Image: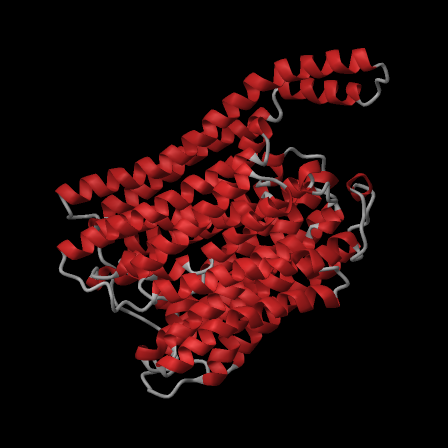
Length: 574
């Protein structure tokens, strides 16, 4: 290990490359979703399986590492070393890029999901190693600043990812009607993933051959936590029991009958016959959709129930629960699950929302600026949040806090304008950025206050969006990105503070909860199939309400443990 106080900048600059990849691919999924919906003729739930494949891979990867470490008594990442773990993760992601290329060549949606799953499995390995590795590359006291630097680069990736992937999918920045999408050649997607795969391999080579990047080996034994392990395994099995019947229902006799009727509908011309067939389709589809919705909500109940079960049991008998013996960690896992799910669901369902008449009837090729602005909102908040980790004078920090968000906003407008998009309809979004800056000054870097203020901002934005339409509602839903941007660090800090020797294990549990990005968006997608995509945004509203509740609960628990929560340092990336 490198215990020098001087920051290892060559290693750090090499490391932040992987932060960029995470943001670039993840945000690009929001463009990929509406494209695939039209290209493969999917419903909203099926299109959201892109998020399911991508984010569930984070959970599966982290779970496998945790279970194997529990069984062997050694942390696998620590045994390999952070350097090799990141190299292995990059090579695994390169393998996923190869799988994506094959899937695109044969026009197979399931193959694309598998490719994204493999890419994200590599990301899971990279992310598990990258955050502690960033802390290792210099003085531990300034470790958060290095993680925040990675977060800033990650957020830049989320801003340009939709632009690059949008161009790769549509082949142009010009408007293409959704009816034309199914006839588009996907050769540019092949080129994109060839480029991405080569970049993964190049980054892996930089890490492997660089003599300035330390091995980062950690041989400390893992704490025993068999009860936590068993609970997570059972939870995973139950989740599969909920999702598999939903997947199989798309191949059922009823689903095949509906497909046949939909095809028949497109051939009819008589209005009376069309209306009669639509009623027949609705009568058949409604019970099936309710059954699917019930199973998906069952999956959500499995997550919530498993964590509350762990909280209850660990509270009575902490032995064998490891980090889960701490209530702030268990409730924080649920908060992070919901936060990531809300963050992803808002952006992933945005394309479908903008296709509605009351939201502009936009084609899939026209939504890129909005997706870029939503994920760019993450960059705005995280760039501002990153300032807290640097030792600026109070006056300098306040000046930067008041200017950096507007610089970031200008960069988002600039990169989209350079790409040829007319951004005039988003100029007034600066009003929402001003509200966010005010929220920054009020929150004063205090995690509890930050979650309450930004959670309230998110909940209010969702409420306004649900009650209005047009530009006001679009701005409101985009503000969800500004609200989410600063939450990761606050939830993370409140969850692991005071858990001592279980800090590393607790961090691993929290990373698993990125699973929320794979569970909540498909649930909102199916809800959208039943009650409409606009009304489905009630789900993010409920999510923000829980995050506010978590802030109050965490404050109470930490006060009981005599922990000072006013001097916590948070990190802004994930």
